[in-house]
Length: 241
Image (cartoon, rainbow, N blue to C red; front, top):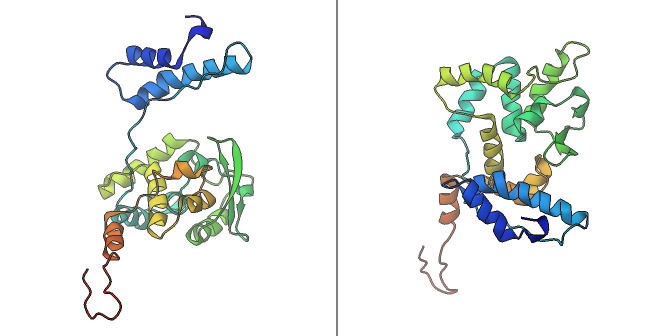
């Protein structure tokens, strides 16, 4: 088809034909988003009229929050660089690539502040430093060799996994670094933190993107439900709950 004849419905039909039996998220990622990018680029050049291309509706992603016992076990049984890294992941909620690319010049201990490069958005973002991270980073930075700019020793996520996997196996737990991001967001959500709050303290740049991470655990849900009571009318001695 000529580009000027391509309509959003044609793109969705092509996605269904190219990737039959796959989830909407796969069709969006592999077909609809790339095709929409081409169509919108042509519209920006004035070659065709702008047409809004809607993605297929996706199921809400499941939260991957690890149990608090897993978090405690990882932190209490790790040491050295791995302990500092896990402390960072759980208390700052960064993506693993964001943490591994952290430079010494972007750690401001006195100001209790970190500067992250959010590659998804292409922006530098200052965020507050958690006290536990401050206490872990202060002695760690003092012991780094002179001239080394990167805070952490792993060159990429795969070399990090090489050191993390033996610890997981020894503890008999399942865990990925991205689960720490879920734990960070949902644990703050348990305290009443809003999506706007998570955007301010984490490396998210859009409050909407924090929603999948800000889901409270079952116990918190039970506590919330326990607050719901039917109060007795004024002057009555009875109250039901």
